Image (cartoon, rainbow, N blue to C red; front, side, top):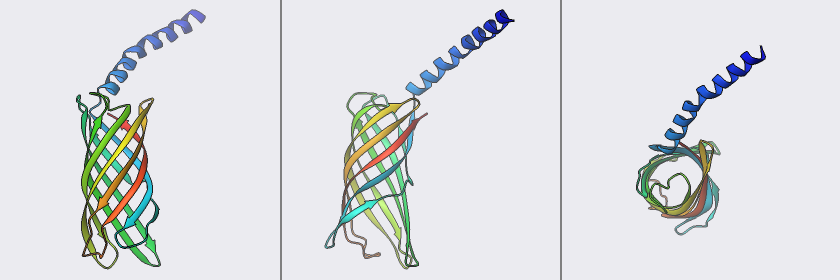
Length: 181
């Protein structure tokens, strides 16, 4: 009986080696990075007082990994708030380009990013659109099949006459988790 159990265990180990090798190959040859972020920072509207803000973890991103040091990434942020019976929504689609320090180094290490996007907002009575640009520096730390991302940056949004929003500057950071497939 002992020989039979040892034989079954050896066969199980030998049977998983090809699967482990395939999993390693697909992890290093990933074509997409997707993740979820949470952010915090200092927001200063033009002509008004600034303050600290924290965004909800409804900020998702999808990156298209390349063999060069440049990678394109789409981001979609969603915020909503209800204060005093007034509900406001914000949708922030944007596109960023990430530059890794080494070609194909999109899974670990430092990167620089820059991009542009829109702010689509509805404050309960009116709706409007604003344009924004952002730039930052970030770091990736791999952990098993996932990884952590840290990013510090600067963001500017134009004014929205429809909503009566002034142009805004944000200095802050993001913390997120990434997955590759």
